[in-house]
Image 1: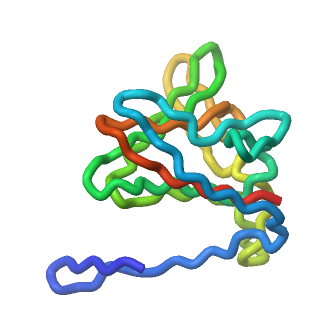
Image 2: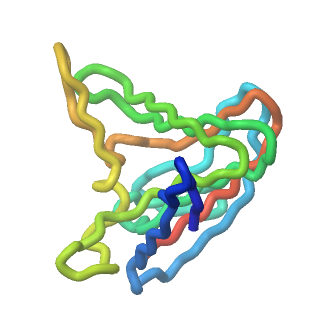
Length: 159
């Protein structure tokens, strides 16, 4: 729950999303991110190995990355193969002491249920010459990088 006040008006709120009731694996790892070095958080493959952070994207219903540093920001890096001849590289800021969450597609006709894994929930479209659409299916690995040594907590829930 967040409280945000602008000119005396409370603009904060709370959003609750129920992740699939069929979760059968919940993995929590705290990973060290070394200064100016891409550190792997999660990778996607045709096999699963939770110890190394390797998962089947279609089985993931929830991903959360939390920057455990109270002072140093991180960048979350989505990396994948080529789409329309261009490599996939997308960076998202993860400020100190904040989290980034990715959910599987939520079925709005039945609130709280998931129709698919997270591979369909991340969608970016580019425009112009060579434009393309990218989903998490195209991403091979999610990394983190920071200007100082920090820790990132990774939580993965799978069916």
